[in-house]
Length: 260
Image (cartoon, rainbow, N blue to C red; front, side, top):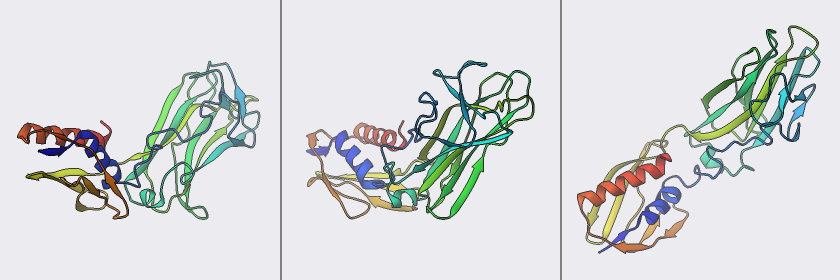
């Protein structure tokens, strides 16, 4: 009997269940020049500057410092649509913003840095989150957090504030900055696998939407996609149905959905 291959199940998973939220840009650093190896290319700053030692960089050869003023702000804005995300994927309520970086300071001084993100719809600010003021005496420390992505999000500005408390330099340091969108939960879970003759049906509960969809059928091997806009054709192989096959499909499908 003809049954769907694992490749066919992948097609159903990626294009059928969650076709617009899945993106090659998920779990990818969206920042340009995040380690400042190309100096300040891709960044906008009022007084920020590049430093190479004292302490040594967390990674590479450079990192960001606050310059020689009491306050500085360095930032870049990411266009989420331009990064490959579709509007309905961004508004599905399943994504989170994971951001942060490595921070340090100069010896025993308390000059500090603060990482923040500002999410907008292109005109209005939707939400602002930050990691608080932080200093570390010549030791790099990872600062990170994940927050929900609000509906309507189209741009995210990642910024670094540096504040001087002692000396002439503003020694709030940042290296290896990162900004990612990732799934805040698995996009779907399998609630049933049924077979009858040459037909295999997977029932999936979409946790983001709260509904169930049949996403794959054989023997015609057509995927009726979630959006009802696209149809995908997959290949088939011959294999006997059994509880072992069912469990293998279930586990493989779950790994695809969760990225595990």
